[in-house]
Image 1 (cartoon, rainbow over the protein chains, first blue to last red):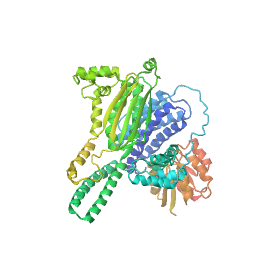
Image 2: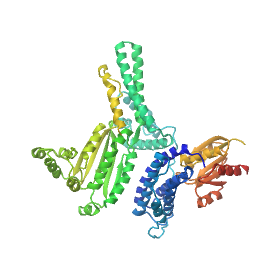
Image 3: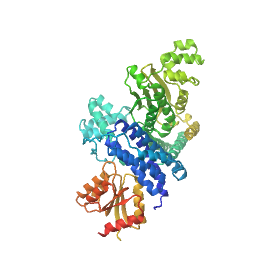
Image 4: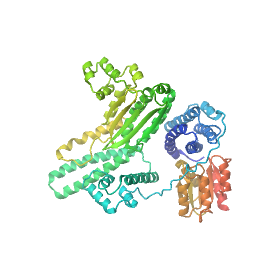
Length: 497
Length: 126
């Protein structure tokens, strides 16, 4: 056997990444049981794990993966099609694999758990006998995207120029305006000048996105998060040192020193921004985990929930994503558990049997807005007010004159929702004060909007990064020196998570 | 023995490293080791230069090992490069298909460096 210690770590990283995708794929497959593409992807992942365990000597992990693989291959061969029961088995397999990977990471062994029952269930599954269906060939399905990998993602200006919709002179003029301080996007400036149609800009942006996706896929490396955090800390320290130098230089009246320190200042700012960007992750890394939660919750409370996501590629500092994790889990849990009604209730209310949970995120001037909304029962405002009065949080007079929006947000107050009845009847409230505390801790804000009978939306606004300290150059020397504390605080805040 | 340039194609980076390690442990002198995680990228590499030996997984995204084999065999200047398939199951129909398409053999996971040495020696002797 091959010496393998070096491979174990890499195997864990690779497998954990694959498992996240697997969760997502299995849920997707439940919706599109006929998709060969998803099924092959799932099969491939399990197959890869199984193939590698043989070398690394994790026989228990190997046997679970093998059992999963054989069930998958029968699905692939059309022996039976995916039912919620099979999906449960397969998800249980994913959980078991995840447990063993965690055990391997902690102890180097694939754990003391006994999976014989799971293996038996996976292998012995006979499925409901079903007529094999001949699948119509779908030529489009396996089509390769015929994109060349570019040497780097093109700038929008370059793409517009290549498209021939706008002259280079116009683009140059717009870029000139940007350099002169026009804060708008290139496309906006060009459209406003009448140099190009909005449709052509949209087309170019679409093209740019595609190219970026291809580029990033081919030019991405993995970096240890610890290294990145360390770089971030150092960049923060550098900003402080830079501020100190700027302050001293300003007092020296030395033109050369001033020039050099300004250069240092600019480079420091760019470095800080660069490291910050490197730490950003798409919010999808968090959302994809929520899909599984929604699926399991919906199943256990007998509800049907469809999840839609917008802005999955929206990027946030990973520390922010970490900090938001519990809040989003909480919000999604509330929405499925209390917000969305059972299919029977929904039909009686004239809604489609399947509830809709929408996760959306978009960037808006240095901040990211995240919304978790459902089309469920909504919150009964009168009950919220009554509860707040009962708990002594507001007086009846205050409650009566309170605008709707403020009244709704009473549910974020600590001590508001200890009573179960409110959550059961009206939809929300469990521990929302905790969500608010968490979000505010990272400099964000949260509010809720709700319409009885129509659904609720939790709106979270957070900064793009956790840097409490602006890296832009200090405007006046006096405000500079007491800056040592924020970085330490920022580090503490991150260290807790 | 002359130094070999090999191309290892597998969608798992761990697997690619395992193959490379076992080649070295088998005592083969390696000149260049190239890696690809799918058949399509591998095809570009094959067109790029002199490769003595290719190891290819079968199940891969974008372009699987079978299609890769088919395309290499139709590529002028690359059609004679010996290809060994990596598989977990020698009885898999895909393995037979690969052999019929001109793969020179297969190694079965988990393989030992001895098995790799034997396979490679056989391929290079003919």
